[in-house]
Length: 387
Image (cartoon, rainbow, N blue to C red):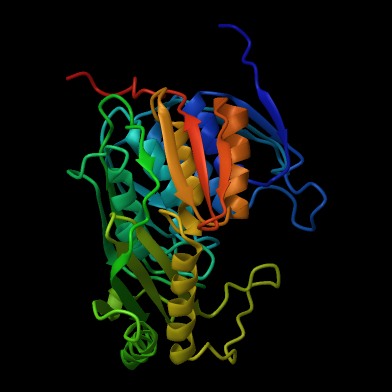
C-alpha cells in the first residue's frame, strides 16, 4: 500500500465543511493548530461527535487525534448509509449542526440512510437539542431544506424527517429520525433564478416545560405583522409534555414563506436558558427569557427581511445550495441569491479548493441580487448498491 498524501490545513475554522468536502472528494486531510492558543485548546465536543458520526456512516474511515486535540488526521472512507443507525449528538450544539452534512453524504451512500439523532442527556429514551438560537431548527430542515433537494432531482420517496421529541439548551431532550434516499447516478444541474411571489406563509411554534399560552402569544404577534400583507397565513402549535418535552424549559418558532415558483424562505429561533459554556456549567436560573410577543415580532421581521433580500433560498441555505450545484454533472447550473452571507463565501472558497469548481458571480443591480453560475464536478454515486 502506497503512502497516503494528506492535504495540510490549519485552524479550527470551517472544520465541519472541510471534513464534508474531504469525504465527498476522497481527499485525506491533516488539520493542525486547532485552537492551539486558546484557553481550552483542541477540538470541541460537537466536533468530535461529528467525526464519530462520519465513522458511523462510512466504511474504512480513519480518524486520528493527538493528545491535546490540536491535530487531526482524517482519511475518508466509502459512505455506506444504512438503516436503524443511532447517534448521540451531545448538548454543545443542536442537531441542526449535524443535519446539513449528513443530508449531503446520505445522497451519495451505498444504501439509503435512516438514522436516529439523539443526545446523551437521557438514558432511555436518548434525546438531543432540536431547537436553539445558534443552529437551524429541525423544523427549518423539514419545511425548507428537504423540498430544496427535490430541485436537484432527489426522489421524494424515502425523504423524510420525523420529530419524535423536542429539546432545548442546556440539557437537550429532542430526538429525530432522518431518512435520505440515495441518488441513483448523480444530481441534476439546475437553472433556478425565478424567486416568484410569496403566496403563503406557514409556521410552527413549540414549547417545552412552559405554558402553551407562550405559543399562542407568539402566533398572535407574528400574525399581527403578516395579516396586513397577505391572507394565507397559518402557524401551527406543537406543545410537548412529559418525556417528549425534553429536560429544559423553552419555546420557539419557525416560519417559512412559499413562493409561486416553489422556493421556500425560512427563519427560526428558540428561547431557553444558556448552556453556560466557557463559564463553567453554572446556570443562571434567574435569567429572564425574552417575552414571547417580542420573539413573534422579531422572527416575522427576520423572515420579511430574508424575502426582501431576494434569491431562491434564504441566507442560511446559501452554502448548501452552492455545494449541491458544485456536485452536479458537468453541466451549467445557474442560481440567484440575495446578499452573499459570510458562510456562503466560505463555502465557495472551500469548493474551489477541494472540488476545483469555480463560480462566476454576477451582481444584478436591478434586483440587488447575485446570480452565480458554475459547471459541476460531476460527482457520481459509485458506491450505491448494484441493482
